[in-house]
Amino acid sequence: MTSNANSTYSINQIGWNNLFQQQLTLDDLEHNQMARVSEHHRSGYTLLSEQGAINLAIHKALPSMTVGDWVVLDAQGQFIRLLERQSLFSRKAAGEKVAEQLIAANVTTVFIVCSLNDDFNLNRIERYLAIAHDADVEPVVVLTKADLCSDAEEKRASVQALDPMLFIETLDARDANQCHQLSSWCKSGKTVAFMGSSGVGKSTLVNGLLGEDTQLTGAIREDDSKGRHTTTSRSLHILQTGGVLIDTPGMREIQIHDCADGVEQTFGDVQATIERCRFSDCKHQNEPGCAVIRALESGELDPRRVNNYQKLMREQAWNGASLAEQRSKSKQFTKFARSVQNENRSRKKEFN
Figure 1 (tube, rainbow, N blue to C red):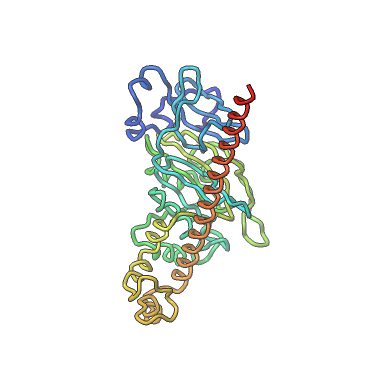
Figure 2 (spheres, rainbow, N blue to C red):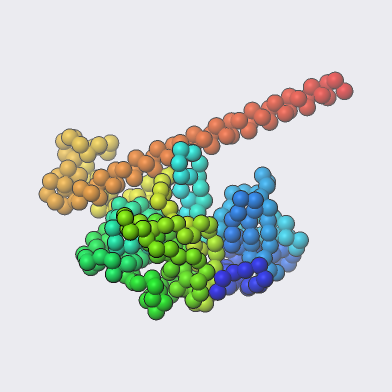
């Protein structure tokens, strides 16, 4: 079922668990209410609580929040504080802008959806896996549109080769019975999210799990097998299995930042080989004693994986440094503005 403004839910129905319960004070339990962000709009947030839906306008006093966040409100519905997150997905904002964009919070399992047609891309799956691992969220790869390719089993095997322990589900998103293969991850107290490019079947999967056509769906383009955007905003839905689902728009561009741990975990074979290199600052090009070069020559490592590892490491380092520099400049400007304000106040007092 889909959350709406006229519905009320217990906090357990919208994903409450012990991690959040432990953050509450006695005053919270006696006088305040807990609510979860279900929608994020340009002007504000929609929250779900046991008292019903609450609209919270965005203003500078609020912290940055996203769908899935838990907050404490007073009896009048005024914001008090944001609860510590269990997990957080974010990315570098699309385009040239140097900024962090929050995607979803407090997710326990992420379904990485990839179609088996011409849009199949191992590099992109590894990118999503790095983000999931860095957020300490369990990833499940969901392969769709097997009917549009003749080598589905080979592609599934290539995904499994990324990690023998990785959960993989192959299904037809249009078949509601097959969609229920994902139900074991959607129990009470759990929050799942779908991530993947546009047109891979995310919205169809959401509709299948919800048992209703909540999200619009669209056909793929015939010229390049790529999908059209059908989901345009993040939203939170209540599942009949007891869990909560966060849907996200398709993202053709998802740049990572501050994600070194996630990349290292995703590329465990590459990282383990790097640690055997003779020099700790080895560039893996022509250095003597380079374990990576030996592994590539012997066929122990896949050149594609090594190249993608190096690409993601460079990207996360560059974007992380850019965001850190922006935060530093913002702090410096804030300090400067405050000093100017204090100086102006001092001058006014002198004249008075």
